[in-house]
Image (cartoon, rainbow, N blue to C red; front, side, top):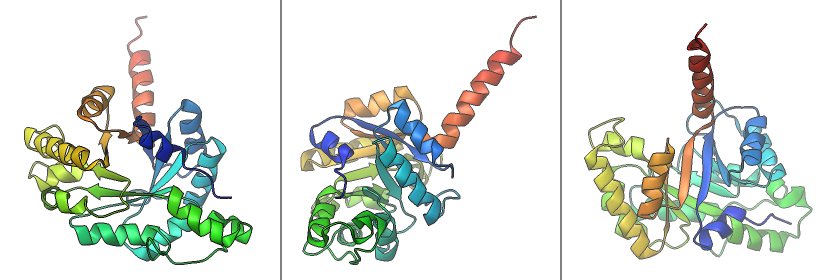
Length: 258
């Protein structure tokens, strides 16, 4: 039977979920994230070299270490969303949502009827290659799969009240880098204008009782947004984490006094 979504339950209990974006093609990176204690991984198909085949093995690795596999797709397309859910993603992140129509399209693509219009096929990995009871599979998938939408620009922020009226949204994810570009300060994710837009978005979502997520690169940034009410914390990227660890080791070794 389809696996229960540990992350979804964690967030429903009001707790914090943390997990990195994943770009490495070796599923061992996902296993390591699980052993390290992360709650989820965001397997990134928008940026990076991952294929649908390598992504499927990342999902298997996530299940092995009992963390939730979330997949970020590259477009708000029903066929794209369908493919990643069919290989076993327990959540899908859809980029560049700017209005309620975009949000409704994403939700409907991630759920079977009567909640949506997801394409139906039970001969896929998510359905145990037809071994699951088909009726129970459709029901449980609708219950367990998470729909996470990215709000990454001023237009999306301005339309957020109406976007959050769309039923079926599990998390809104505030993308600080794209938002900084939309604000005219590309890359300046801690610019006052960017912070102000994000803080206002968090307050709107809290009023609507929708979980908010964002991307951080330090414990200090995570602390700031957790205190503001953000509960879905995407902490850095596997390649960045690896680089920082390597750089720290090299710097310390180069500075040994002989």
